[in-house]
Length: 148
Image 1 (cartoon, one colour):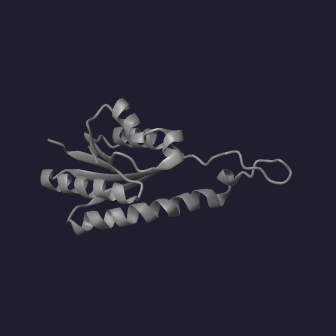
Image 2 (cartoon, rainbow, N blue to C red):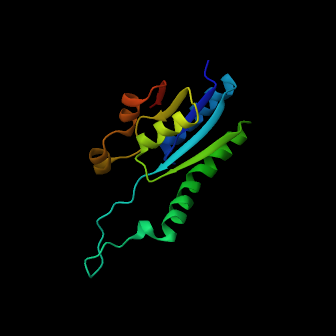
């Protein structure tokens, strides 16, 4: 049925449930697995004492910091896959909103199913950003399995 499954994770406890369910399904179907995490764009608007933008996102440390943070999500996810006898490709998408990064990765990887959880953010950030899962559901051209 499904040959290539994309599992989205942000490293949260809820996303861990989605990861495990997605891996279970992939194992049952003998499907290829891609695990993606997305680093959203740096919020511009920080200013130094002179009124200039700090420019952190243009510094060499920016990409390294974002990659290090992503690997703290992806490495354990890949280890869970390996423990279940699955080989998973990990993908870090830098400077994209979660829904955009997930949909683009699904297209690039020719995924025929996206697995994600109902939400990974809480409080004010969820209200301000809206539901990334709802965005993926609305825009995806492939089926989306939402784990609650």
